[in-house]
Image (cartoon, rainbow, N blue to C red; front, side, top):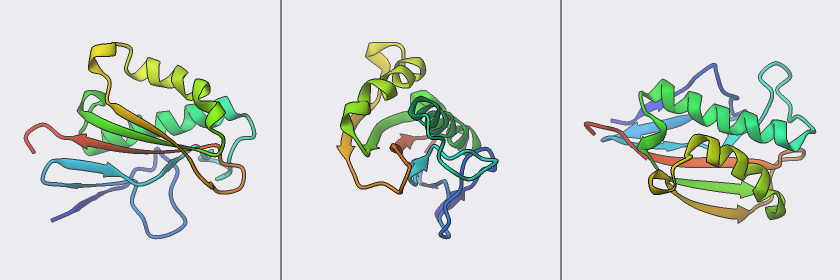
Length: 128
């Protein structure tokens, strides 16, 4: 049976969507957005917004009992793909060792107004 993951430590969707779901040891996140928890809006500063999105990824993994090294794939959806260097700062912070990084794919996407990045990740939990 699917187990929904919802944490108050990450922004929530307006629709009835959990932050992630786990089934048989496979965790898949919903879209992770860099909304400020207090204002429920996107900070106009892109580096701040991206920092929030990557921080929320960590919090969602923690809530699910997963670690960064359980992540096998990350999809980054950019409003503007030229913003990839801004995301790379956080990528290297989370996965500093080249031999232990998940797969990654960058996409250009129509995102909500004011949103510059959406993250979707897949992880394999130990013992799953």
